[in-house]
Image 1 (cartoon, helix red, strand yellow):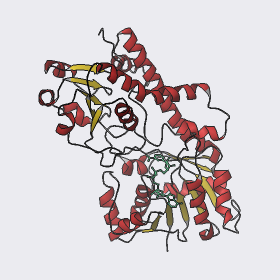
Image 2: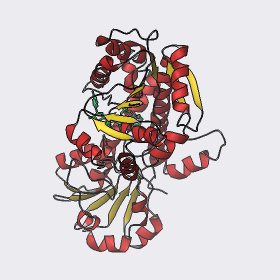
Image 3: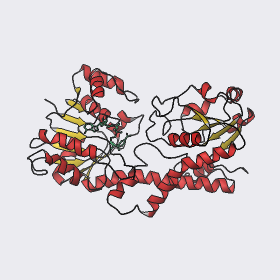
Image 4: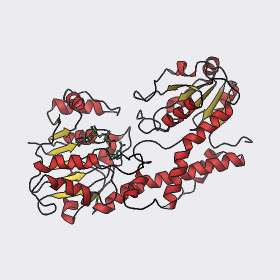
Length: 421
Ligand SMILES: NC(=O)c1ccc[n+]([C@@H]2O[C@H](COP(=O)([O-])OP(=O)(O)OC[C@H]3O[C@@H](n4cnc5c(N)ncnc54)[C@H](O)[C@@H]3O)[C@@H](O)[C@H]2O)c1
């Protein structure tokens, strides 16, 4: 008998399913991708996440987890499917609706259905609940419980954070909130806080929008610092010594499927995005083009330049290159006539071929660091200078020990650092 059915076995759904299985419940993980289901049942994990492969194998060995193409009857259902944006930045709920419709026929009286996907406000009680009842005779809140519990884990430490993070659970009714809170308290050691579904949806979006707006501020401070001849990294570090200030870091763009997506989740409910949120999104969305302008300025007069791009992942310490600003930056460089080679120590799946560090920088006219991987902090400037055609490096992540690189003959250009300093 299955206790929990987790629909969607991606970056969030698989670690969630395995964490619950580890806690002692019987779990089935459902996904529409046949190859993924087949591999998971063989103990083959596709995701780069510390501890996940070992946990999958152990749950397969103990028969606490199995993968399936279709949902099974269970006590609790969790939906963790993608909620992307369309080309007009409108949220697409097709996966959420399809997942809910696939669960509908299996729901029994007393069951709990939890939506973990990030969604526009009102989705849990609206489109999601409606889709659950499209193929079911039962009445939500009378016969079964529905809740939203957003996910806030950090890739790289997901398995620990799934257990230790505080969770906000918002039910469609007080009964649903209580049922969902009881479920999470079974395997979560952090606080499990009960609220309503709309508040939980807005909590998730607020967390990501806060970070997008904060990064937008950091990017504006970087532009101001460049103009004034200051060093934004010093400015932010010292400003953050204030006990109530936490300015984020600037960079070449904001990627991933969380932060840049969250502001647009509001557009399902509003005619237009609120001005502060919209302006920050615009600033962050312009960063890749702004970065390329800076690079092209440095390459002016160079015929058929080669650019060595260091970093494909959307952020440091992870291999995930989904919605990474590196794609737009490489696209724009190629469109401007440059040859581009890309290296990332953690990414395996990227739009462009990935090369070794040596092959990437070999004969390059300029190198640029786009991802804050710790591996880039200890690159050897002397070897790199010998491999490159010209020793010019742009550091958009404040990764390099600048003096060492300058001593090796490099011109080091840092995002947010004015030339007079
Ligand atoms: N990745 C993160 O770090 C993160 C963090 C917080 C919240 N979220 C949110 O969690 C949700 C899931 O994100 P993810 O990164 O795990 O996505 P993902 O793309 O890694 O995985 C989603 C999986 O769902 C499967 N799927 C799609 N439709 C399905 C259906 N109808 N039935 C069964 N399976 C289906 C896909 O095949 C895929 O394997 C999204 O709403 C995302 O915004 C993600």
